[in-house]
Length: 192
Image (tube, rainbow, N blue to C red; front, side):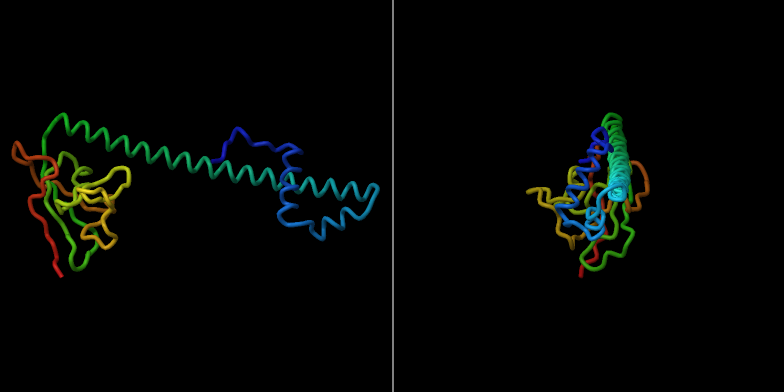
């Protein structure tokens, strides 16, 4: 991974870049033309070549730094989102109040798929991470549904979607006391 503290834009770094470039691509016709002379013209041409190489090196470092900063921001946003979901899960576990949620997929789904279901959960995020089938569960690390018994990912042509962020989740009421989290009360399955 790119480390912003190791950026070296000195002449030595530019010369290393040029040396690496020469070994990868060979000497160019322009470089041979610059190296064929001697005296002041030759020195000016070589200085121009090295100035261009340093400019390329600085631009490369700036581009790499921008990519690194974008990766860091993306990872931080993902971590904030995961922390918010974890906080909601903790709050829901403490309060213990279960609500009834209607979870609906945005697309048609087709044959042999679920279109929607009613589930008992404390929050909408928890409801979205419930599979309408009792044979699958949500895996936080993989961010997808896996088989409840052996942990293998659900098949690609599965009966439900892994895109839990796109699901439409609507609260339709409060569950009776004693209802366990993740209890699917009814589901609409379109058999083929």
